Image 1 (cartoon, rainbow, N blue to C red):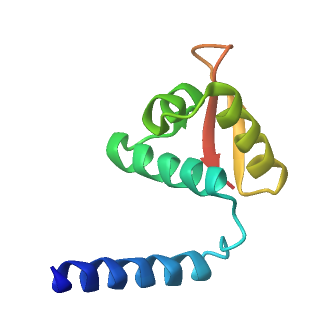
Image 2 (cartoon, one colour):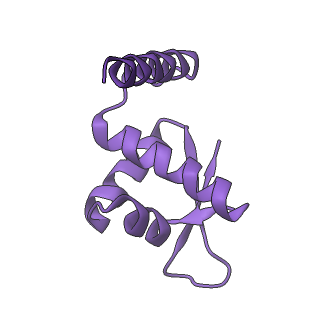
Length: 95
């Protein structure tokens, strides 16, 4: 069991190093969850994800995701572009 906890501690230390390198250590828990969800969705699909993808994958409410995305967009971390296929939807890309 001790090895398991040591492995988890090592993974958390690596994650903290990555967050520091990406300069996202000041992100709120919601911002981190949305940020990681976007990365995960884009890695799986190979293309930009949209707000609905983030809501479904994160388990967060649409209003929380939208509010968080607007904040990340305002800080210049992501860009929100209206989908050419569905004008009600926005595609998310990193700035």
